[in-house]
Each structure stands twice: as structure tokens, then as C-alpha cells.
Length: 243
Image (cartoon, rainbow, N blue to C red; front, side, top):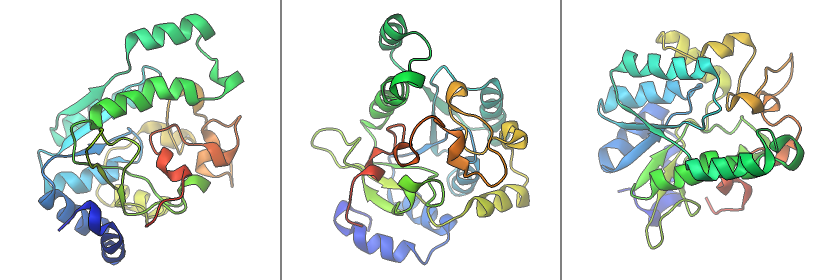
């Protein structure tokens, strides 16, 4: 049984499972669960989950600043799997206030947190307010802030007051190579920006290709310290949490 009280036990048991087997258990036991799809290599996770549960709830955060290729890719995935993808948008008035006060690119001067909070964190909080659990494509090899990501977590960041929210990261033990081997093996559609040197893909102003031997997250918020490169969606990674 999957509950907040046996997270430690779940993490030990999930360590021995492949992501698809972990997903099978999660999707069978938790009815009100949503999958976060970022429009990048998360498509491997979506493909696995879809094979288990064709009507799985999938959502994506549309910040209004994504690359045109990302929007086209999301639509391609929607058609390929014949699924409904829920688009979650930021509050228009909050965006208007930010851009009126600071313009369109204030994050280059004072950091990405304020913009990401409006465009990502608050919309995600709304999306998760009625969910029991959510699934993400986080991997431990993605960045210094994710090296200790657990397979199963109690999400204290986005849980509604008085509620319990579980968070699962089935790909935590996978590497980037594992993900791409899966994508190629099953001929899964992927964002064409990956073929142009983009590895970690987010909003257009905050994402750039990486060069040889650069880590994938060096293409995100490149003007900031690597140890702070979380947009708020996975802020729990920056605090110590018992496994």
C-alpha cells in the first residue's frame, strides 16, 4: 500500500524496480494522480505511463515564453498518443504587473525566481491543489540540486493545507543516456530542439544550447550559480528531507 507513512519503505523497494514497474504500482493504487509533462525528454515517462493507463491525466505548464518548437512538439505528442493534455497558465494580472514594473527580461538582472514563481510555481500549485499525487521526470544526474532526488516523496511544498500530496520520480535512477536509448528504441517523438544542442529545455529566454562536455543544466539560467538552478517546481530538492 502506498501512503505517506511508508515512504522510506517504498524508496527501498522501488530501488529494485524498473521505472515501468514502479509506474504500474503507482497508477494502479492511486486514482487521482497527474503526470507533469515539460515538453522535453519527459516524453519517455509519458510513453511508459500511457502504456499502462491510456487515460492518464497529463498536464503541461504553458508559461507563455516557450520555444515555438516546444509548442509544436506538445501538439505532436497529443496527436501521437491521442491524449488530452491539460494546459496550465499563469495569472494574467500577475504577468501584467511584473512586465509593467520590470519589463520582459528582468530575470537577467535580479534572478529567475520572481518570474518562475508567477509563470510556473503558482500555476502548478493550482493544478496540484486537488491531486493526491504527481509524477515527474526528474533524474539524479540532471543537476547538483537533484543528486539526492528520491523515487517517492511527501511533497510538502505543493500540498494543499491539511492535505497530503505524494510525489514520484520514476526516472530518478536513469541517466540521460537511458532516456534517449528508450526514446530511440520505441521511436518516440521528441522536441526537435534536442537536435540543435538543447538538452534541458525550458522557457526560450532562459534556455540555450550547451557545448561539448558541458552539463545539460548549464544551458538553463546560465548567468546564475549551478547550485540554485531550480525554478520552484522542485524547490523541495533544496532542503534536507528524510528519504
